[in-house]
Amino acid sequence: MPTDSRFYFFGAGALYGLDNTQVLPTPVKFGTVQEVSVEFNHPNKDLHGGRIYPVSQGEGTASIKCKAKLAKIDAKLLAALFFKETPATGEIKGVEDEAGTIPNTPGPYTVTVVNGANFHTDLGVRFAATGLPLAKVAADPATGQYSVSASGVYTFAAADKQLQVVIDYLYTAAATGSTITLTNRRMGIAASFKAVLFGIMDGKHLTLILNQCVTNKLGMPYKQEGFLEMELDWEVQGDAANLVGQLSLSS
Image 1 (cartoon, rainbow, N blue to C red):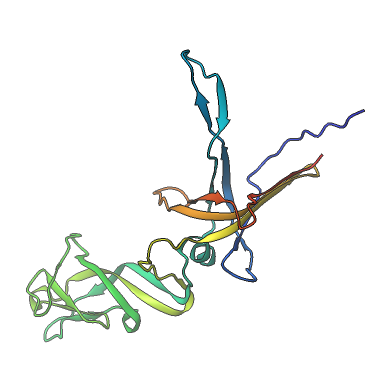
Image 2 (image 1 turned 180 degrees about the vertical axis):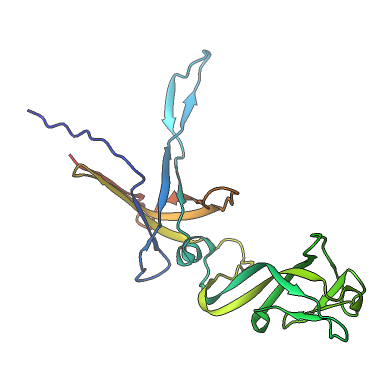
């Protein structure tokens, strides 16, 4: 009797990317994949006579479009497979609502933020009691104003002495994390990778290999209540041997 080759599949599977620009690429696993979509599109071209329905059809240009939603953020994956950049060690961190009190007379009327030694970018100051923002000036602030140095020293007006403020800013951490510098590359340079998707259920395997993929969209939807699930889209090309890939299924 013939065997039944049909089976069910559940879940998003495991997804990997291999950078085609590298001679010996290190496989990168897409972390905590929520969803993977692969769409094969083979539109036909119609030949019409004098009637409403075609008398013949021929296959035209085809496309394979994919997208994956992933919850684990991976700098190496984003750098290699989308931005086409090399990440550097070090990160930029943010601080929100760091508390400070403007000193009393005789001053100086300054507040140095905790991470002033690695200060990166000022993101504003507000009065703690009212939430009203102070206006930034280059120097010599009047009441309701402030200035800030490259080392994170905030200077205020004598008229605002003893008032409490909250400060937002960015600072750098050289020994942790990764930073991808986004350059304005010339057009025509696209990141290319091999995608491998596989899954197992009840001992049955489904494996899809796509030899040459080019990313074209990265979505980063931040939510008030929910995890950031990045969406990476890519399209598939034929490789140098005119092969697109392989689809393998258990029997």
